[in-house]
Length: 578
Image (cartoon, rainbow, N blue to C red; front, side, top):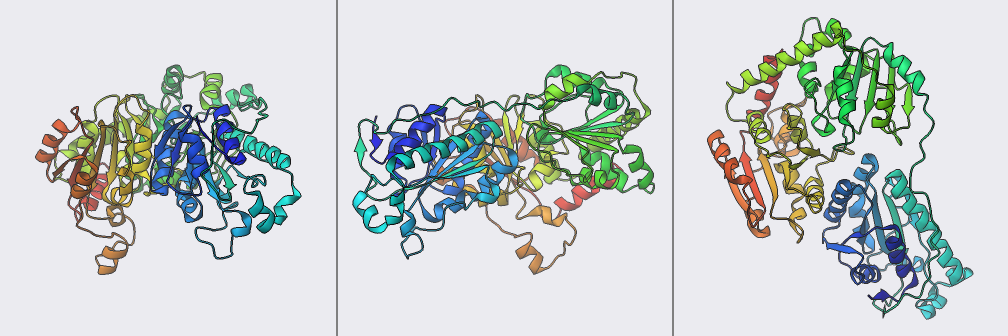
């Protein structure tokens, strides 16, 4: 083992080891050399080199998402840190413990015209759980510090060491307990490459409780309200796989007064649940008696858990036809998404549901009516697929149907995740999507990071813009041969053709839809992927036959769909099932 000769670098490395943070994603640079040396020379840590900082942060986020533990990402000084911000924001809104470590220049070198210097302290403060701005050691490069950094000499080296350890403790507790991203900014003076065989610092790491203390919950009160609510709706947003016990799912399914609305990203499955929310609501929107039908769907009690909800239609419905009571069940956060939140229950959903559910198995008219609507859209969808031409809608049906059991599936944002909501996923699939901020910027990087420690293969389904935007995600040596990418290439931002304001003008094509004629063939070749391109249903089915076969290289299947036809087929689907 080798250590940097800079005390603050030793402290951070040793502190991470003491807390079990072992996965470190490093982007190359000079100012972070003391940290790179410490992490890469220690057998406890597993280090990953990812050059592009934006990709590196999403790669680490995907790993933390998969492992459900803090993962660190380390960069040099200057604008490198700012490239972490999209992933930090996603981690903040998705409760993922991303640990950002940025090397910094000494304070006396900031804003004097030196290169690779910006104001790094607190730069992420709006979207971070805690920022630890460590103090610069005065025992290292003492001559330079005494000349240029006299203001630093008000503290002793012992004071600095104690302060830095205290700040690290606060930051890492936030990462472990609150599942929040945290930022550690650490200034280093040159020289940066000095080595020692043994550390010179001795940590005084206190034992801390890393378990979140649950508040007392009056389960009798909630159970009474639940049992006396004749029309109940459970709406589940983004949720990790296997977080709700099967017995709880069965109890929810058997409750004759309860509709359970799930999304592809909810990772909850039962034949009695309602997995395609828009297919229920869109026909109501188009109905002549929409007001009466929405009132018939309106719940007395709305119970929500999980993260962000994809469906805009359910948001619009619940904001206008608000329930009398809305509980959100989450140990940390409750967003008032529907502007009617009455109770934030700070408990794990599985625990809460176990304690309040005493299902009434007699099926109410409320549930019976909407089960009939569900059966109607399911048969309507099958009939519609029989008559439409090759398009995005048909492609997503084929792609989702052919995913092998047990895969980890990552969905890019925008049209990809929205199309996926319309088709059933096999219960064995584990589905992820960056819905915290819903950006297209890091979907591929996240999927690659998440695949590293997944037991089985990983599939990313993405649009052309998402893929091209994040193509540097493939620029690393950590992509497994069983990693698969399906690109649905409709020649631009196809979702904009569905939204209000679409018009066939040069301005729309250039600045909204961003029409293009690019494909992934040369990127696939450059990064060592097998590549296949298809453009009709027979080619697609033939391509899918071999796509999942074991191979020595990862694979890309690119599907070209008709740009100007896709939106019409999607909108006509909702007319067809209405």
